[in-house]
Amino acid sequence: MKLRLRSNSIRLRLLKGEVDKLALGQPVAETLPTPTPFHFSVHPSDVAELTASFDSGTLTIEVPREWAIAWAASDEVGRSANSNNIDILIEKDWACTTPRPAEDDSGTYPNPTALR
Image 1: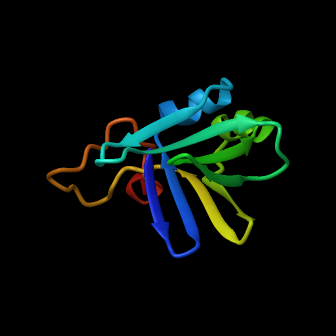
Image 2: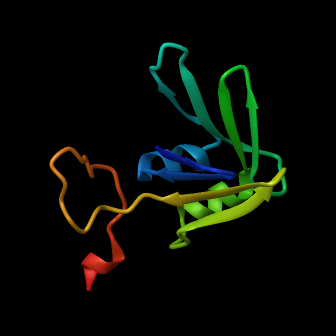
């Protein structure tokens, strides 16, 4: 899972296996091993829309459970919402079109521009 924070926005990009986990009702979590660890996770939940919360060093994004199930089986790229004045975008992670030496594209979705 990739996380980008900028001003009042959160963008998450999930690998295929992570999207599949959400569809099975399982959370996806990562930890940035800073001196005070920063945890971030995505949880399928009984919410109507994407929500964001931060508590005890953990950023949690909740996604509607039914949407997570449908999302995994569809071509839909992602979803956006605003939660407490925070813009949230969650999307499937596509393979890069330009290879980068340190970038691992395993588990990504095929990039549609590369399929043409």
